[in-house]
Image 1 (cartoon, rainbow, N blue to C red):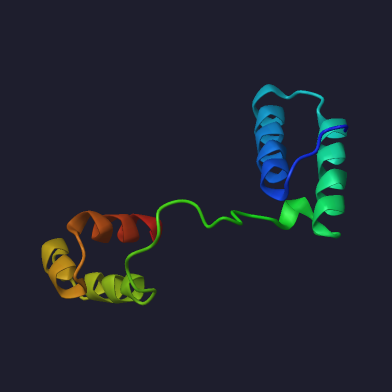
Image 2 (cartoon, rainbow, N blue to C red; image 1 turned 60 degrees about the horizontal axis):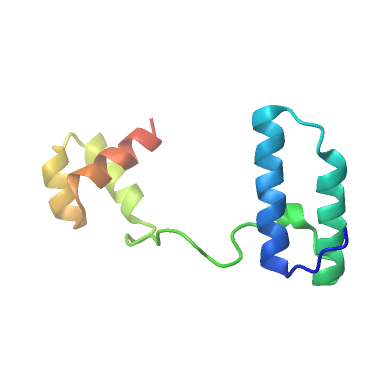
Length: 103
């Protein structure tokens, strides 16, 4: 590849090409290998497949890590969703999301 790209650009290009290949079953394995090789060169040997969200983009978690466990314990004891939300200081929507994830 004759392109000069930084680490983040290469990572985003690789992810885009991977999604394209999954959606359209295209033959882009050579392109992915070229991007991967260029990424190793730019980063000093780091594997692009291991790089996930290096900018820490996206919505940040606002609840403490033990909140999910606390929600699950209260629900096992038969507590209603609104009461769980009040006790855990979160919305009933978050309570429902946690319960749905841990079915």
